[in-house]
Length: 156
Image 1 (cartoon, rainbow, N blue to C red):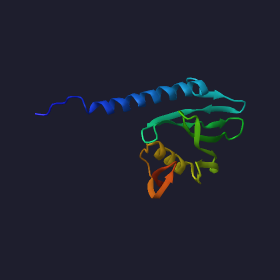
Image 2 (image 1 turned 30 degrees about the vertical axis):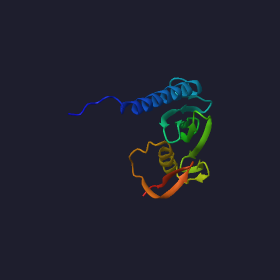
Image 3 (image 1 turned 90 degrees about the vertical axis):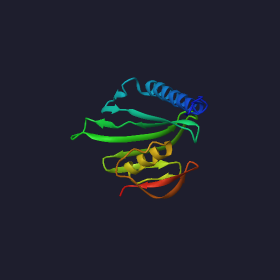
Image 4 (image 1 turned 135 degrees about the vertical axis):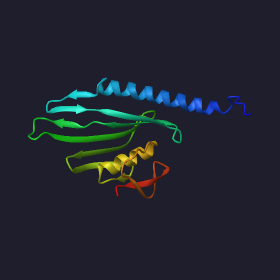
């Protein structure tokens, strides 16, 4: 009969608390920057901001992926400008950003790596913060991003 003395539970509890603290800090940061709803009215339309956060134990930091598409309702038909940013919240640092208008990628980078697709950038950003989620994404070759060995992501 196995007896659980709780000795193995301490690291899990500490990690859980760090994740909870990251979520709280990310929510507070988002609400300060974007308001509770994330909807901002502009002269040309609206920005519809949302975020994902993740505590990364390898980097010992809280990472936030901000998505803030802008809808320009003054143009006919309306246009969408996509903006995504990956932040290290604890160190107050931007790790990468991606801007796309329609099908045109204007700037997508993570540190020194550039990307020609917002989808590939999002996959790489999620890989950096440790939250790769489904989809038609496959690894190509190993690449070091922000000191971590990750897979270089590409769409098939």
